[in-house]
Structure formats: C-alpha cells, structure tokens
Length: 114
Image (tube, rainbow, N blue to C red; front, side):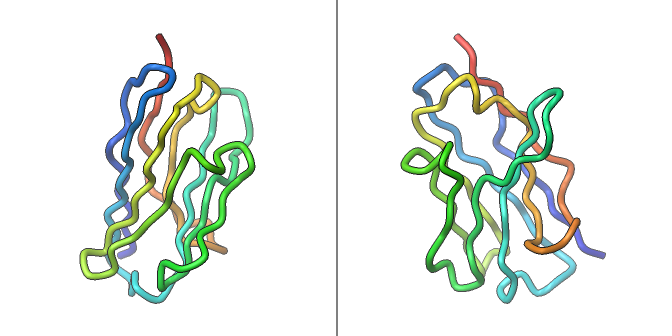
C-alpha cells in the first residue's frame, strides 16, 4: 500500500538548519508531484512547497521562500526539504503529501527555539 515516512525533524535554534526526508513506497513516485505541508499547534494545515515529477520548477510559500529548498531523488524514492535560517514560527509538524490528494505520512516534528 502507499506509504510516506517522514524523518529528520528535531529541535533547532533560530537561524539553524534541518533536513527533512520522506521515504515513499507503494506507488510510482517518479511520476507524481510531491508536496510538503505543515501544521502548527492550533492552526490549520499550511502548504509549504511542491515539486513536480522531474524536479523542475519547485514552488514555495512566501513564508519560506529563500530559506527552504525542496528536492527529490526519483531513483531512491526520496523527497527532501532543506530548511535554513529557521525561525520560531517554523515550529510545526511537517508532512510529505502526494499532491492533489489527502495521502500524507505521519509527519515529523520541527521545533525552533533557543
């Protein structure tokens, strides 16, 4: 069955960096657009970034543009999110998702605090 497993979250200081990974299985990863979304406590799910099947033309929410970078390795069925210059407002649970679907993993927690 379809599985998405996120990893790489943790505690980071403001200005720090983290790299999230998402391991995909159970579907043809290389042909689908993939998305990162996040949800902070008490807030709605927020779109963060998407990348098409070839890895070209990634898109970003204004809140993360210039700080986050999405990428993928279709040979390994992996999706990444490199997060730099982290801010406390980036604190959230991050999920990878098959774009245009409700299919997402269990998420990985990112906490940015000094």
